[in-house]
Image (cartoon, rainbow, N blue to C red; front, side):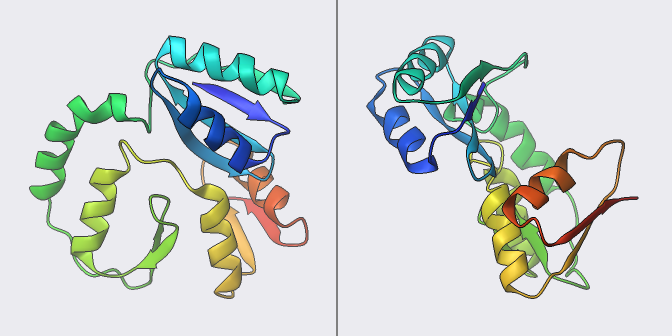
Length: 164
């Protein structure tokens, strides 16, 4: 995986499509920051091309897998079995899932999206934009860190984003 900074999403997507090795957009973090995932050769080729096209940075990430890419397909069978064996009830509020960036309340759709998330990109930018369009005006990041609230602020610097 590699973080690509300072290039429009569409340029990154087009470069990934043109590479003969496996490489795809994996994490739409915020405008101007997109993580790609795939084979080592695919990542290397895409980073080189995107640097030529003016990326401010093409930083390879020290991760243990090609997450959110087709290379995760073998893990899907086991994940799908575990998710399908789990009872899901209707949530009390809409759940925004990064696989489609839309609010969901149907437990079967939520299950399907959880399974798809293994090989699909994380559409964080689109999720935040949809939440803002739906009237969300405050974000609370739960956990040790402030990465997500920073990404929210890069989508809309006027929105409230805090840690809990």
